[in-house]
Picture: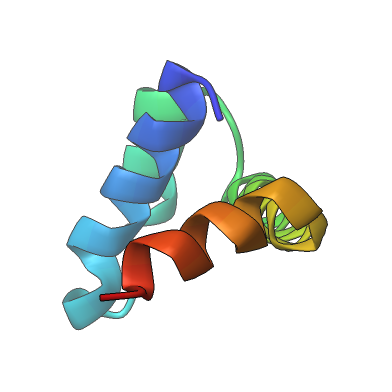
Length: 71
């Protein structure tokens, strides 16, 4: 995830309790419509989910995690 994607997620999270950002604020901040912003957020979340799932499939990661958990 790059810096721009993080900025998008931070922005969206900051507006969650208010029901989402106003359309004009989204356009001024990111140069996209609310629909485009929503699609971008879905894309970011999907990519991060896939990245995390891929990391969990790495056998060496499971071995390292198991070693850390052992007394």
